Amino acid sequence: MKTRKNDSSSFPAVRLRRLRKSPAIRDLLQETRLSVKDLIAPVFVQEGLKKPEGIGSMPDIKRFPLSGLADEVEKISSLGIRGIILFGIPSEKDTRATSAFDDKGIVQKSVETLRKQFGDKMAIITDVCLCQYTTHGHCGIIANGKIDNDSSIDTLAKVAVSHARAGADIVAPSAMMDGQVQAIRKALDEDGQTDVAIMGYSAKQASPLYAPFRDAAHSTPEFGDRRTYQMPFSNSREAMREIETDIEEGADIVMIKPAIPYLDLIYKASKITNLPICAYSVSGEYALIKAAAMEGWVDENSVMTEFLTAIKRAGADMMITYHATKMAHLLNE
Image (spheres, rainbow, N blue to C red):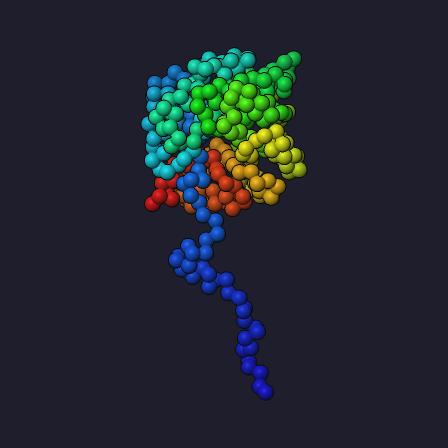
């Protein structure tokens, strides 16, 4: 029997390109899909502003006065986005961050305003930290020249309760103090705020990618840095310990921050817990894409979509991103 010169065994039996040959087939077989309901939009609200104010290091992102907040959130809501996270910038700061837990503080008034207008239509998340409210710009209370963990968590618990009383759905402690989730859960429950959830900034790296946020929130540390409480970006096992600790202390959602450089942590977290996982694509990630796009070096929509898809593919259930409204516009087209 003659052997055929071009035996079929010399050709690839599997051609994966068959599954990519048309847009329709690619759409049918797409494994990871972004939705506007995956997105959480960060919103900066500043006490004493008269009109929205641009942020130089974050093009297209603004600080809003309380009077303009509801209109901005209405625009976000109209795109189908169901969650926002509020960052407040007070007009008064001190060493004890007292304006952070003032019932008439900027975040508290913002939450009350939004709750009245939107009811349950929008999930309101509040950042619980002290850096915007302290004259020194650190995320905790200073004692004897150091960030004092235990007095800091006492203050963070007060902040969380004040946000919950104003109507927050979810409080998100970001100070990376040991025991902050447990202290906040206890304080919320004792105040009767048992339905308020906690999104722990569980694995928050000491990253240079926060620089534009610090510009936006006026929260650059006056001295030193935050490496004694934010975690080393080199340590994945330590990140898992932080996540596991937050879960044990009562977190309802865990967060990894930043997102793109730490896709491995998002993936690992998705394998050790059934809790929802949030990834925070931070200001530096936004600024890098925006700057390159403004120079014409990359296509902003394409890179934004690829980055956010990668975050979801790694295992995130929801994403805080400064590209939220732009991504929502694109998804809605």
